[in-house]
Image (tube, rainbow, N blue to C red; front, top):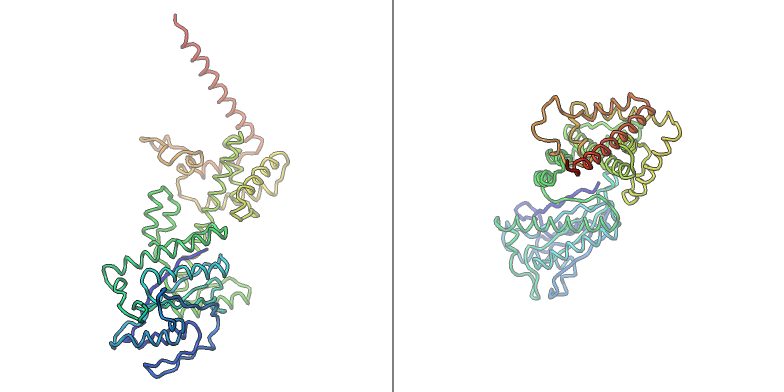
Length: 428
């Protein structure tokens, strides 16, 4: 699943850091710092996929020379506690191609140049060979002064001010989310990223009536493992894979993170199943099937073990599911029916204690507020669990008979209504 990450850090002399060392490390090159009289050699560093420098249009030619560029940055700062550079760390989606990752990083870096007039040095890194192989990321190092024809000039105070810095960074966070989502859409991916806080996302989900997303977002931000715990968990995962057993976290932080990720995965699976069930139910009802038959087709689709997970072929998959459900009505397949029965029991056990009335109404095309006000406990509709248990305990023949009786009752009611209408039209 695509995840969002953008962090902004500063390179401070007061912390014993320099722009020349930071640049050399991120791009894997050798840079001699003239101010310190030290050589920063990281030419043996691996995993660097691409590096490039972007500058304003009227910048001097020497700005394309990385060693000269960052030595000029150091020379432009005279204070012992100066902030010499700013780093934007970006997570890149693993779902898109390397070319797309490069392009969206370049687009983001160009926006920094245009917006603040700074020099930008970019390094795109591959995932660490011992870590998560989806962890593509980029380091975008910028000067803290504007780069003009005469060299570095005024500080970019808009990013340093307490009043404007947060606003500017939030806007850049939004831009980075937009660039990623466009790339994901071009690649045909359904996943999207969101730069907003979990609380802001949860409020938006509640406003649009998406209770499931709101519940999923009602959590704390994921705990950061840190280098030591991350290394221990990586070794534990590798050992579990070699031994062919399930991975068990070995640190407290690792256990918290692992549990949170499992919970999010469960929510995603539940959402997939609900979407498939709603679509199948609606298609079956549109095709003239009764509620029971349509509900069974929806449940079979939601619990299908071998369903196609490609979102681009969803409509074709839905057509196949509906077609298969009708074929299954014509020929007995006890194994498939028993499998669906067992899977439904598992779902009901997980759903124990929840009132399924709202879900039933949504499945029928109503909103959750259409149940009516003042409905007492005695008059409430059966829950999802109650209805499913009733369905599972009846043979298929009885279900079809009940479906036919329901249709006959509807026909009788319509005929009586037409008779009443004709009678009301005559005067005595």
